[in-house]
Image 1: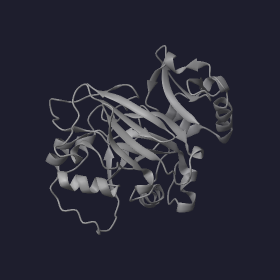
Image 2: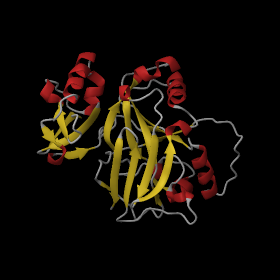
Image 3: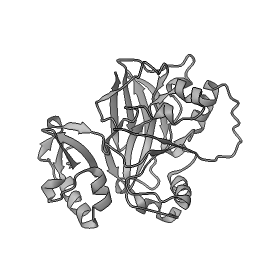
Image 4: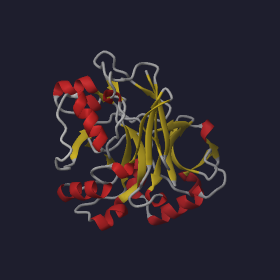
Length: 294
């Protein structure tokens, strides 16, 4: 199922995409009343999911996508997003080149975690603020984001997918000058408008375990990133097991699994974003997240 958050006549609602792919059924059509996607994630029952599956099987929904204002599937995450850094080998190399550091291919593969603050996640089709007053090196990063569906602690590899609601696309927009100046990633990745997300959450049952998906980005139609989630260094299973050993992963937690090579800083000279650019982040089976730089 493809779950989404949208506005119609100024009212925020959540729904599911119908089989035609161009229309949706609001959850209220099935008698389900949830105030937000977070509310749904926290309180939906197995019976509620069965109702949604029936709605998703309808050939045509009651509302067309042209009638709505799309929102990010989780417009206001309850907590900072957990992100994985340098989780594809080729991106680790280009990152080291940009920072003029030596990259040792044989070094241990230890996960790099950091957090990303989100004021309001940016919807598909909406603007990314360039923050030109403080940013001179705006960059894009297409990432597969995992949405946790229920609280979990000490999750085993065998049970990881029982705790996943589904997947979405996240563009980990980054201000490289702030990243390098502060020698940490939090500020440079947490400016307002730096978290485009969507267009949907696609439920975990739609994918293999683990999901092996083509992942790409384009800027003004030029293919920049072109990889596959099978090339992640730290897997979804490894990340969830490791994190849950030391912390409770709450329902609604978003874990963004890192980006492949091809970001702007990886080119010589770098290809950073500028006002008017259009960025498309695409992941097989989920869709395309398209935004423009304002």
